[in-house]
Image (tube, rainbow, N blue to C red):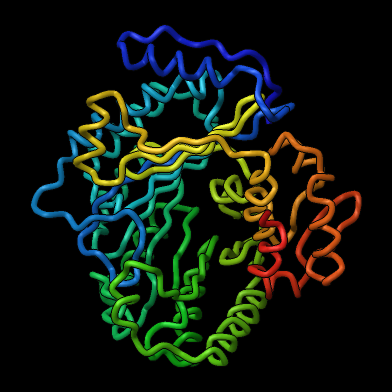
Length: 413
């Protein structure tokens, strides 16, 4: 958290940067909110290409057709960031997350260039967590040693399962052996990494879920992300639903996860996140605590705070369109301010995902609103036994976690 003070606008060498500086100056004008401090700022970088689109995936990812235009895309990322600088001038970057898509398709030289550009243009915190998503099937030991040498200090590996049958059902490009090899390469080169696993997979049994989790924990990863498979709109699975475990079996899997992770010393600190002591994902914590983030790259989203407003942006999704729009000086496709009526819900939508909840004063710091604007909803949630609150903390109860969607809905409107 840094105190708010007037933000200096740099004089850019191009018309597009000058225009961005003019827009940034407008955001400093008086408005509906009164933020007394700016939240921590993170950077998200999107790499949009993957080898093959998985049938459950609704992310902005595109199958690589032929050679990926790596140089052109890296040029666009740098230009995009340069144009965005006036919006974040003078603010330190605390975490960086390179997501996708499959960023580990990037060459070692390309990744080195990207991180060099970020260091040139941004004041990165000396202890910044710099995470890169990687998928088995793209792991080469030498390349990942180069990634580490370039400055990546945390990996997030999309294992999803160690079971070959389930990997095939999920449309993954790797097999069980490649999954294990990916973790072994990570262990050899990184002391901080996350393993993504999914459960309630097509025709998965409780014992198979147990074996997957036991295999993952045998590597003692600092962090685990455990996701219930869901049928997202506009995916192949939504159109052709597979045979999934019933609700009772899914609930048994959730109970199993709680038992096994707890026994192994993992803290369940967010809906899908489990960490060894002190190994929470700093970048994701910033999201859930309603911190700020600048997103660059195709389809990337941003949330940026100013003294009297909070801004959301979305960039063009299609890689080709994104690169063309960057060249035109207009990478942002959608932009809007979060209205007062929506601010409380947006904060609570994120903060209620955390097991520890939040300090009451954080609501005012991050929204610019007094806590009493959601007093009615807090009373309702407390009356239903969904939250606990005192002068130090507001957090979901065990019942609130179990019925999180219902709890979040209370704050809608």
